[in-house]
Image (cartoon, rainbow, N blue to C red; front, side):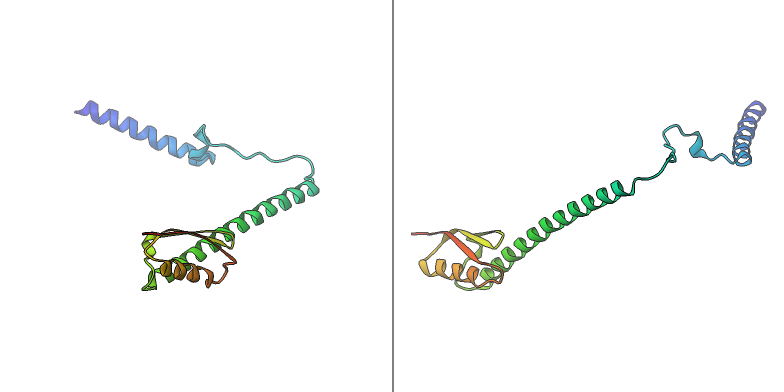
Amino acid sequence: MRALRAVLLVILLMIVGFIAFGWWTGANMASFHPAVERSTGTSGAIDMTKARERGAEAGEKAAEAAAVIRESVDEAAITSKIKAKMALDDNVRARTIDVSTSGSTVTVGGTVRSEDERERAIKLARETQGVTRVVDRLQVKR
């Protein structure tokens, strides 16, 4: 039992010594970790023209990405508005009608029960704000 206590005491003293040595020398645990990358300073002058060009390129790419996202959100909003109108209309069964939007062009497809239902679905799509053209791919179920 005394031997075990002596071994544990030696291990504890080694750990305390290791921590005290690190604190005393100003070293931290990251300095002992080999996977930590250290930053390196630059020497010489920074080319401000290249930095501005790269910044402008990054800004242009961000603007292009934002435009694509904005267009996708607008298309989804138009599709949602049309589907909501159809769902609220008593004469149209919205579950059997597919609506897709590309830009301001809406394609309406699927199967309807009558010619009146087809006309009503097309009218709802045309009356939606942001729609400039409606492609009719509805089929009347006979």
